[in-house]
Amino acid sequence: MIIVMHSDATPDDIAEVVERLRASGAAASVSTRDGQTVVEGSVDARLYEEAPWDSFPGVERVYPSVRGGRQVGREFKSENTVVAVGDDVSIGDGTMVVVAGPCAVESRDQMIGTAQAVKEAGARILRGDAFKPRTSPYTFQGLGKAGLEILAEAREITGLPFVAEVLDPRDIDLVSSYADMLRIGTRNMSNYALLREVGLGEKPVLLKRGRGSTVEEWIDAAEYIHSAGNPNIVLVERGVRGFDSSARNTLDLAAVPVARRLTHLPVMVDPSHASGRRDLVVPLARAAIAVGADGVLIDVHPSPETALVDGAQALLPAEFAELMVSLRSVADAVKNPFQTP
Ligand code: PEP
Ligand code: MN
Image (cartoon, rainbow, N blue to C red):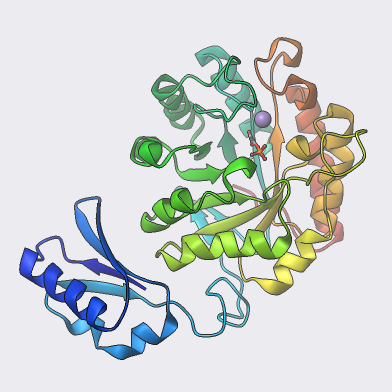
């Protein structure tokens, strides 16, 4: 259970809540987020009913944990969740949303040129990372704050919101101050401290499936974010590690309808990171829309052969534009009409 205190709550108000939690046998921890104190009681559904927590002095709101289920589960809420990104994009409303851009921001020209091209072709959200999770510590790690500034300029020019990865709880405030949506990558799906921290904020979160995680574990990871207070979560299937090295990962398309049945959250697919191969991105993206994904994430780069990260899977802007045409046909065929700006 999470208890968010008013920004003008007194130390006595906070102490009273903590004492009452401890008297109920709960572990209580206190932290500060955006100037507000947050008191967290150990995750036990009984606690919520133990006292009228929201009428304690200084308490602004209370998020319960759910008895016998998950807040992200269909058993908790049967209608689909629709996640708003920026001023006018909705993910999960039955229309197709395409996120596109380079894997990493490398320069102003590269990011802004790509952003203009993908906007022209019909992408609704830009991607491009300033902080990259690289397998080797000696390879390009991203431009950091300078990359976020370039992304903000790309948004200004195109009018498209952007999503960027956050790797470290210490960077959440920085990335959130620029990005419209945060991404938790495959390597961090089980980083519960990071999940909780993005859960304490309000920015929508794209949560990638861990490359060795089951669908249940992925949904439990989403529960960490939701139970901390942030319901704005979109799941992303991006392939799991298999035995076959013909593609970088094995795209688990069954995970899309399985996750849809188990949760009310939107589900998207990243065929670029799933396959690692340009020639597989187009057929896998079409398949993702056909199995009912709410959209896809596509890597696009103006000169993939010189890309600092993931060039082998990036489409050229012209290839992306062609892909968009065929995705609209697939979306129409499965009655999932493309969302026009
Ligand atoms: C990415 O989208 O750039 C990325 C690193 O993806 P993943 O975490 O799925 O590997
Ligand atoms: Mn990448």
